[in-house]
Image 1 (cartoon, rainbow, N blue to C red):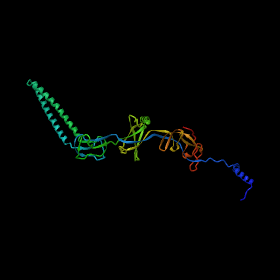
Image 2: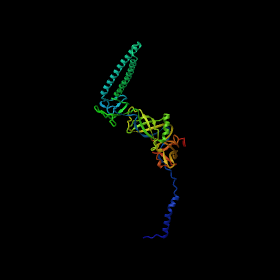
Image 3: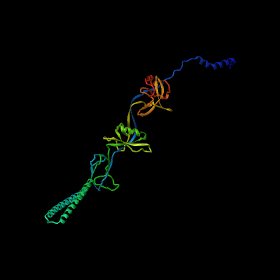
Image 4: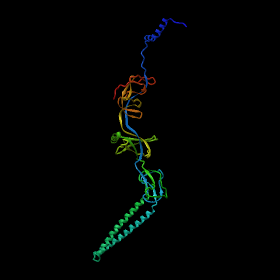
Length: 381
């Protein structure tokens, strides 16, 4: 083994200890350049935007009638099919009415007999009056004749009332549609006995489908805006049945007279013409209520708005540099955010790549394109 002199070992140790410092002192590289962060940038725009909210609603008929018999009789004919569309006044069912028809004929005969008796009493009164005038008759006979005539007049009125009552009862044997709409499943067939007892099976249920209601609940905080919109006539409603692509347009018809304390909501009903029966009773709908349209709203893509400890903010690009700008978010509409303060129209904001940004960082459009120049208008609106 070769032994090195002690002074040589000391020299090597000194060089090894001071060589990095010497290299650092001797090398003077250029200052490092700040690296640009690739981002996507879009301008803020000023345009008309609706003030609206979305909720879930249920289709409800404006009228629903359970068809029952008012008399006990056999079903003679069923003139409507299951699920058929009917008009007000259409004949739906006929019951066996032969018994009441016979009673009507009997009542008509009674009226005719009473009328004949009255005519006879009137002739008797005229004859008694002539006899009294010639002093050949008795006053008693005249008074009795007049009494008989008055009694027969009252009898005729009674007979006519009984006849009218039977005619009304006859109408019960023909069941007509009280409203226009769509009938459900018919529960009776010809030959069945119609019952009027409590708990008896109804013939069918008729539901009005045009116009029709959609009921939905909204938070109490929107109540005042809703009432103003209804007064101004700016409110509109669209309803889209779940699973459908077509929508119906209507208007708010009624606001419930109280707020539900348990949920803090108030129930509304919107009315739709529904001529094509797009809205089916009982179906769930996606409801969109538009209260009004704001004409000059500042709008940015939804992705541009970030949330920090101090609230919402966006990165505004000015001369290739991203700067943090606090904003006030008013509402989100689809894929856009409406700002009530913080930006002016035409300012460029970052919509993708914010996670790599800090205030004052240099940016470039993704793909190597230069960042758009800043707009002439700066500052908060």
